[in-house]
Length: 369
Image 1 (cartoon, one colour):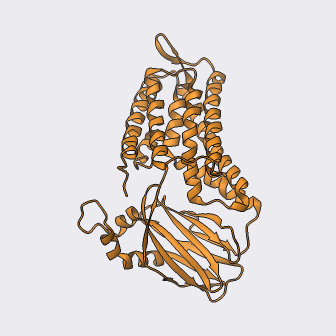
Image 2 (cartoon, rainbow, N blue to C red; image 1 turned 120 degrees about the vertical axis):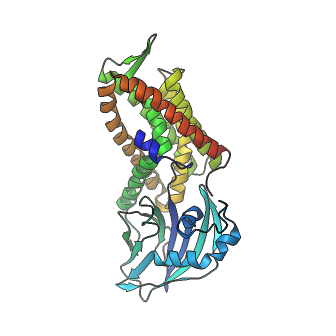
Image 3 (cartoon, rainbow, N blue to C red; image 1 turned 45 degrees about the vertical axis):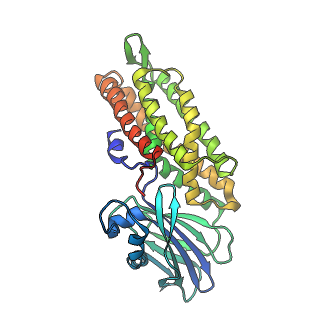
């Protein structure tokens, strides 16, 4: 938990550094659209010329050449062993994503011949942020539906097939994305852990006492995790299918508030034996947070159900891995003052303070642009 607290500093805690790369195969090469966060570009290129902490369109536009040069140097495309050189095809634009403003570059990679597959090597920001990812939408020539891929430190080189992927490959991709998202979603993890911390304890008139059996603790954990899973699966599906939509700012603010309430509940014990109810109610809102990430990844309309199932399965596998580590460790420490005071009490206070700051940033739109 301490490691999570130290790492979870951004206001948009489940939204790490990403760029959005769209590649579309054409007769003479590959059309490229690349959305790159201004905050990341500012960190590398120092776009804020006057140092006042706010980027203007003028400051960004004056550095368009440097931004384009950086992008072209950090993306290499080739086919049949021959490089496909990149060049700009239009002026830089700006676009707004859920976590801030992005520069939008229009590029084109000219390939002498497209055959077999495209070899892509992604290197944006890898030298300054190992957790950075490139969220790729690849549409082969003649195809109508894009394929979702992710460039990361361990997957910087990828083969992009010119034929559509099979069903199992699509399922695997989204399972992996679901696992990855829950593991980097610090606000989701802290909400779940805040609810699980008391599961190895029992509240009585004298305060918290150790639970008498692992079975009882396991049942409490099962209730919370099942309720959270069911709730976010419902709203994730509704949001992805376009049946329900909520403003991102509202969703992110309520998610932060849910972490605060779950942590404070460990101090006051207002909701004790029915923590699963809290998990279900706020899990509905967390589902909309998952949906925003899934929307950023892109969904193949021809395999929408498969992608949705895969992402859900990945999220659940990620949660189960967290629970598998938490439960035996918490059960072993439940009789100690370190757990009841240090972890439960002071840990909950720390979580509440951190999530409270997230709430202020999100509710009042103080997140970095």
